[in-house]
Image 1 (tube, rainbow, N blue to C red):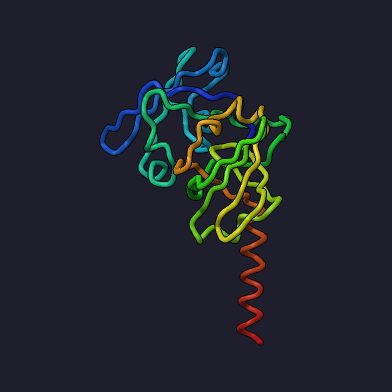
Image 2 (cartoon, rainbow, N blue to C red; image 1 turned 135 degrees about the horizontal axis):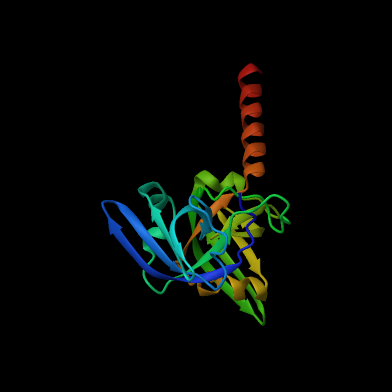
Length: 205
């Protein structure tokens, strides 16, 4: 499990495909890999990946076709910056909201507004996911736990504080950038339950 509190932004050293699997190598900051064990999970742009090899300043991952298809990891090239979060441990403070690291879809940036130290990003998601994007609800974007702002016909805004821009890769967004989206699980359960109840009520009326 993750909390959506990104701790580091790290550059890609290499992203090589071999027989449909990407071997992703990241340059990790000092101390980031301390205490890792084989099979440990790290969220990379919000995608839960298993560490297959690591050194003091590197972490290696194998990214399979399902992750490449659902996320923006398949677009990575050396030099790109990715958001990192180590898996939560029992007793850790949940500063964001609980995340599984399983990406549902991608959103495309449609507008960016900057005023002083404030930055707002508008993006759109596929119609399938509209019911789960609710104003003032939670959403994870490239692994960052954020609150949804205004929502209108599949377009929604998020408002970023300077600290979020400093520590994550969201400051590199431009119009057209595709971002990984994990829908809040609790919101999804509630919406699906209500829709099933309403559908059942209509058929028995």
